[in-house]
Image 1: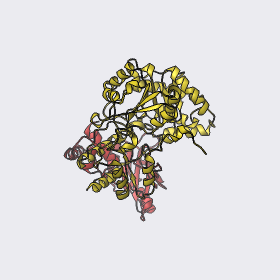
Image 2 (image 1 turned 90 degrees about the vertical axis):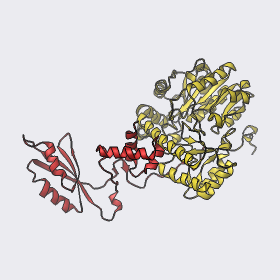
Image 3 (image 1 turned 120 degrees about the vertical axis):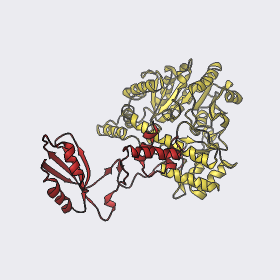
Length: 379
Length: 162
């Protein structure tokens, strides 16, 4: 059967090959996983189970349970100073990924250019293409510690773009941006009239400074949609629950796509999410503390091995420079010879080549063994 | 977090972390880690280190019992006096003064049920201040000191994911 040109034009993900290589190996230690190694807090799981026992298995409102949207609004106000109306400025989605897809389809017209800060999560570029837009890669630079700057935006020609999508704290680099650094990006977007799709899924996982949302900066709220969710902070990836916040017009347009395609996000997951917001701050703090220790451990080991790695201050990734020229070959040989999986940076787009994404969402014992194997591999 | 709190958190997680591995996880260097531990030990904050054992996995399973003790106090005898006397027995693994229906919560360990029973009847019950003992033998232990016993959770995540 013929597939559409739109889909045919999007290449399969480069991560697939590493997945297949890794799957063949016994005793593999994977530092290639993009999700927490913890289970969701028991309190949240218990709330989901209780909702099933009560028989709450119907659809919810399109935009998500009212109570959940209120809790999200309160949580975002308290943590990041964001102010969104649960009535018409918040939509609960099936993972933050759905939210991003909705935004692309609701806000991007065919032919519109969407600047994509890279290296990045692998779905932004395909998302733009599925919506008929033109992705414009904006490679960030190792010397800027993979932060987005006015200079890299200008160099990529983003002044001509209609929208900008980025993610900080960042997957795959672990980079974060301070309020001052974001202000330069905000000024650029105001000047050149770009809308901003800010993926803040890792906002709860910062280790050096608190997260700032670009939507809190002057003149940005009206041109920004913020994406967040429960997958990373609450270790709820498989429950598939995220949310988007933005001006009523944007969220309304996104909801129009959502109501015809998804109807509503999974009800059971919404119950877990509500409990997560109400009762799981300590669980998040505990997981964050463990990630931070592992981060210190990984960065210390890289420094001992003489591997160049900037001090990634967020998410659960380190992004060291590959000790050899060819990161793809290094990662392949490392799997085959030492049974350790990492992901070469070029899988994540422009600016990622020559680097490796090392996830520390893995217990310390495995992390320690894996890093010892990497050290042995380099000898 | 202070370095003392940080080291305590790490030791509570795994008391066998090497000083080097603790240093790598914190902003301290190995010598500083050793110093903090020495200080915590000297101050009596760290009273000891022990393994958490799942006795079901051992051939010689130990018998454990939780014993509720009721006591009466008089002008000369305090809870601490009774506790001091009981704690001296090596059979007593744990001893706590608790609120509620009884006074002391005592954990006793022995090689057999008869040994534990004999200890309670011959050494504990005769203590003049002790008015009642209720012994609960441990039938199964599922979680000790935060560690859940069993096969452990398998990592069912995809081995590589975006």
